[in-house]
Length: 79
Image 1 (cartoon, rainbow, N blue to C red):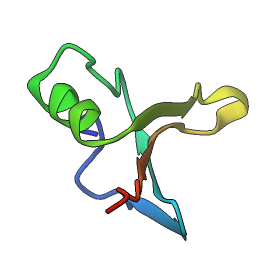
Image 2: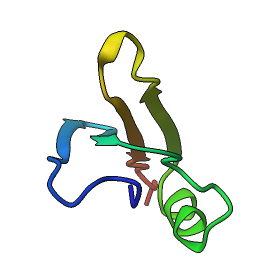
Image 3: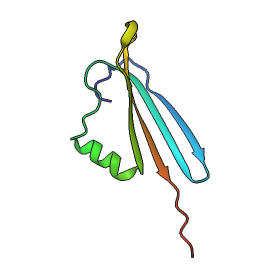
């Protein structure tokens, strides 16, 4: 999310379910939003069970947005 201007608002949504937590973060950006070759991306994909990149291209005069949806599953280990 380093492509975002310092004055934009980061919107985060958290969904907690018995077997997982899902975090969705979106922000307005200008330019390339996600570099999947970075160290930060590797850390993110290592810690989360699922990572999804979200985005819009800014059509019809709207600003471009990007987002990430992360899911971490809760696995119950039998005793």
